[in-house]
Amino acid sequence: MWYIMAKKFTVGVIGAGRIGKIHIENLLRKIADANLKIVADVNINDKLRIWAEEKGVLKLTSDVNEIFIDPEIEIVVICSPTDTHAKFIQEAAKAKKHVFCEKPIDTDIKRIKETLSVVKKTGIKLMVGFNRRFDRNFMRCYESVASGQIGEPQIIKITSRDPAPPPIEYIKVSGGIFLDMTIHDWDMARFQAGSEVDEVYATGAVLIDPEIGKAGDIDTAVAVLKFKNGAIGMIDNTRQAVYGYDQRVEVFGSKGCVVADNEATNTVRIYTAECTNIDKIPYFFLERYMESYSAELKRFFECLSKNIEPKPNGEDGLQNVLVALAAQKSYEENRPVKISEIEK
Image (cartoon, rainbow, N blue to C red; front, side, top):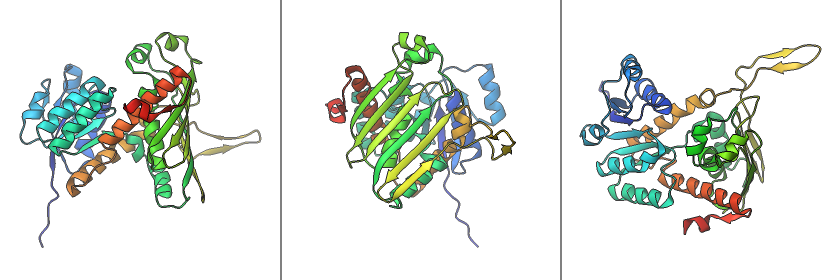
């Protein structure tokens, strides 16, 4: 009996920070189609060297060009700082290497479009890491909408609340709440609605930490979206939900409604004469979404194997940034903003 061996793709990873390490471990342990050859990071120290050796990384280098010039490497996974994403996507594309890139592609629309032009011209495949699409609960919501089970989507409600604010130094360089935090929610809203956003109205305030306001940002926000298919979306964000990492999605349609609620850390309920208790929801985003990181990479490799366009792709990355910039403009000018105003 003959067996056909599945093709393995040789991979290089750029960036070995927190998210980079998650992708590296998934490539080494959970992606059967991956052969990780090189990890590049500009900040190599003894701690990183020890970690890489323990995990089985074959080569660690501070020279990212080793990935681009290596003829064996077919895929580049980009987990470096945001301001390097567009540059590295373009370099990988020119070297005819497929790309998985953490969000966002960039925060500048012109730079994003220039990058997507290079991607299209070279014919490589690009997937952008909006991992929450691959959360099993949110995926089940999407399936019920896409199949028509709840009819035409009419209202999309998203709650996304962090348990605690990031450091002020991070806030200062984050690009603001709409580009940093809500970027995932713009993507989730578009994903569930099956439509592009036409208009956004956003409002917000500093209700948690005055230092966030001094840094030029807000820590609490609400947005209303109008989609091109007629649906309406609502998103609420806060940098601090004291009870944990609150992540919920609801889609109301013409034939029904689908709701993805928070998952407790276990299924235990405690019943007493005074009350019924369950344990808290996860506190950290990696507790909540860890499985989605391996799921998105598996999907990317599946798309390459089948030669189909991965999603979310570069256009999704562009649309999410357009909505984020429209939301920022809406907040600053206290009015609804058409996405077409940002595209000009």
